[in-house]
Image 1 (cartoon, rainbow, N blue to C red):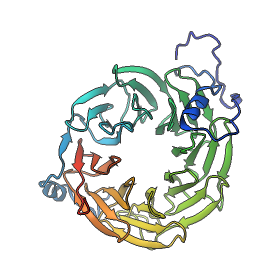
Image 2 (image 1 turned 30 degrees about the vertical axis):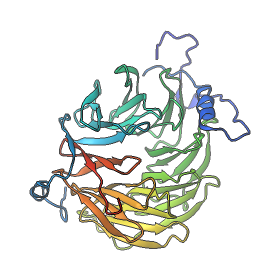
Image 3 (image 1 turned 180 degrees about the horizontal axis):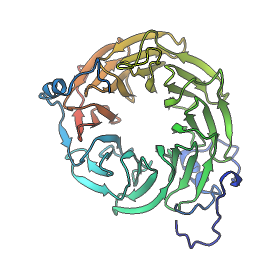
Length: 417
């Protein structure tokens, strides 16, 4: 933000006071929400090894000889940590990597549309705005940049503490971030008007803006979960103690209407939380699993990723020991246990089916039928672990990011198509 701007307000840590407008009584539509958030009275903040049980590299290289991908993106000079598809068309991908860069590129042919430079550390977060007009890239050191895709210009930047996560509001040009010091930041882009949601001094490890656009759920290193009111700036629910997790939050997801949130933790459990009441209404865990390669026999089997099925009352929980567990949402009963040979990094449900996909430390992408618990298909091509992936709306292609310095596009084929 321009530091010469009139009426600049200086922030002083805990003394920050935010005044915001009242919510409308009627249920707003997405456009109304975007307008409402645009009118929030923000404050002006100036710019400021153990591999036991896993495949060896030689084994993965041998399997990767049958590269199933349609396209390989090889512009990065280090591990590729994150990937997102643009929400408007699903025709563009953005990847961030160890080379301190993010690239926006066309999924159909791999052509680079924008190179995001100027970062000080590995780019671990890269996401498109709700209308796909902007892309935000964030590095581990806390440097965040926003770029306008059409003009290929950097239009805003800000530096925070060590960055944990970065997410756009679902229907407004508003960006949120969680940091190592426990703060959650929210900015209007490109104006840069800012407000913070402060909590105890432990990492804000994961966060998600709910579909109503009014609230965000944030998980913390001490096992606490907070539901924040984005307009009023206060935590409407705090889940901690016996109700909360016993270890750091690793992941969270919400169902389609935002009424339920599923949280995962290093304590080996996933909790189902009603976002209206703030009550834990279910808990999921698997017995007997230990993290592969763990030196500590008491170390819990960390939950690495969670998600809701959109078409059936099912949830999926992915564990570090390679277990993909499918649970019944209403009874909390384990329906299927799908075992992988290596730890699962991330899972994603297809938007309109009962198929859930996983990426693993063994370099493979797999599709599972949650009705039967059977694997539908497997895709290989990477010679190192897959660190992130995403699937388009039609579930016809997946884009993966890997430690082998590459991103790949896979066309997804299934017998039912």
